[in-house]
Image (tube, rainbow over all chains, first blue to last red; front, top):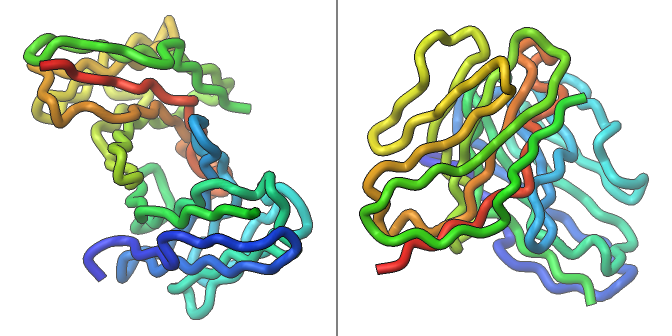
Length: 114
Length: 118
């Protein structure tokens, strides 16, 4: 696609429910990143995928968070048993090789946990 | 560990004036990259400018320039002739060049909210 696509753009859920956030990176980009941005804050790095390689999960805030990337392309971030503190904008980004280059960001998913 | 500090939570600037957004960083790495991103109210992060730690010249991209002072670990963004459309959040970020292919992602500062007034 022309840019990084994220869906849904907004998600409202009840505490305790599971949610799935999707990211479709720019075609041909091997590197994919997930970030979380809480209200009025900077971006918190969550996880990085390079192609089909297993990701480093150490940045995920808790074991309720998981992410996968199928076929080296689309990625899904799953949050189980959501809590109110999970409310944030979840941003996905991709880059061509994952080396020292700029990241292209999607418009994010605004997650609200009631 | 890398750290980015942006000391200006908010700034008001008159249209057409130049703007300097401060950014200082802390790292023990010798090779690193510095980035500035703009985030308008739409939420998307827009890349503005990049400076490599070994680049001798300050980076420039149109109205944007990066005042890189390596000894001071400073990477201020300068916007010349500000426009109303420049109103947005601005984030300074960095990464280690040899971070194993981006394993640590970018480290971001908390941002500066810039408002351009007519």
